[in-house]
Structure formats: structure tokens, C-alpha cells
Amino acid sequence: MTIAEVAELIHKFDPSIEGKECVEMGVDGLRQMLLSEDNQLMKPEHRNKVYQDMTKPLTDYRSEEHTSELQSLAYLV
Image (cartoon, rainbow, N blue to C red; front, side, top):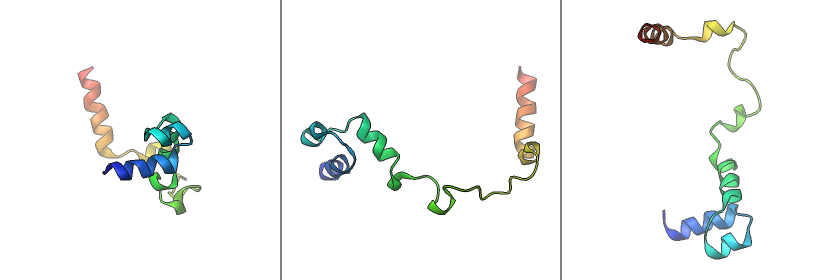
């Protein structure tokens, strides 16, 4: 990433005038950048709704691999 690209991110996300002048991103700018639409982990169509089948009991969602891992860890304790 070039200095110009970093300066562009700071100008876009950092709300402070000092940060923009000094080309330094503050905590508020970092927070805004991480929570922005550009950095979303979920697809926009899945963001505000449950799209998986969540009708079964929680125990039905554990995988056999995970269960055997937990059992092997229990033997170590």
C-alpha cells in the first residue's frame, strides 16, 4: 500500500482534522474504517437476517470431529 493510498483511507475515515493534516489515523478513524461497508465480513443480503436453518436443537449442530476433539481433550485433563 502506498502512502497516497494510506492518506486516502485516513481522509475517508478519520473524523479529526489533525489526523488528516498529519496523515495519521486515530482510534475513531480506525473504528469507522473497520465498521464501514468496505470491510464487512458478511454478504449484504445476509447481514440483517438469519439465513441458516436454526430449527434443530443446538446439540445437532456439533460435528462428529468436534465431539471427538472434545473427548480427546477431556482425557488429557
